[in-house]
Length: 302
Image (cartoon, rainbow, N blue to C red; front, side, top):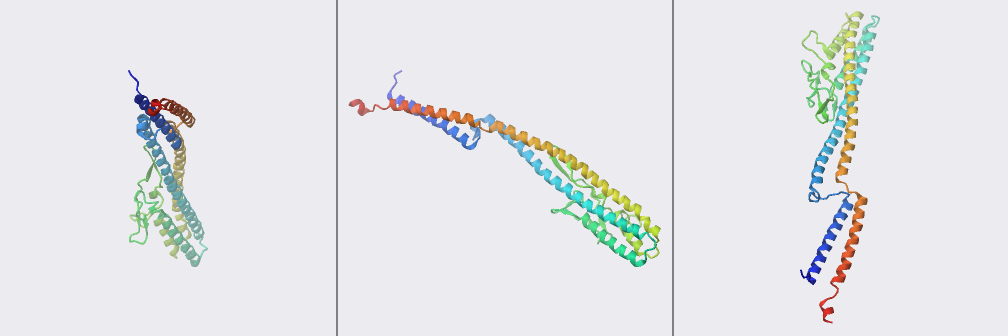
């Protein structure tokens, strides 16, 4: 085959173009730190990258869910702690009032304080976290306790609020309000937490009530205190599990980042070496080209 000047020039331009393309590819890798910058660079790596990125986004969503779970647990536990303090104070006042030496004015003072503590318990039962009620099961938009209506109402919604904290694993994050903040209007007199406190207040208002009558309420108060303690124990147990799951998800995040980095990130040392080698090739190609096309038509005619 006869080699012409035109063929030499075309080959030189093609080789220079390829060299520039390779240098451009290495420059992109250095600038972005990624081995590929478009799916066509390596379709297999691109497909794996999409899968790994989805896994990482899933893990990051679980980490955000942990914040929500902690907020539910910690706010519920804090509220129940305040409920415990209020009930313990009511119990102390009941023990005092069961002393038959207290006169009517002293009993009235105790009744006033217990009435305020009952209102405090109502406020605790209606605690909101953001715009959600903590103690109304899954019906988080409705106030669970309203003692101003006739008859007074206390929600019995005990459906658990669950949050997905790992793939397919849902953990309850709320306390069961039906075991703590209760009112049963079907009995005479009404029972449950608020019914029993009302009965205690009525006995303190009744001048015919004896110390034994008031003392009989202590057993009911102890039962309600135990219910609050049990609810806090359940919250604590779930909190421990949530912490263990969070540690596991943290490890999954590290692994997911490493796998994605191994798949996509450029080996900087290797890229720089390739770029320097390509620069040498490109200089050599330019040098050879300059020698090949240097004799022009005018040079030949001279």
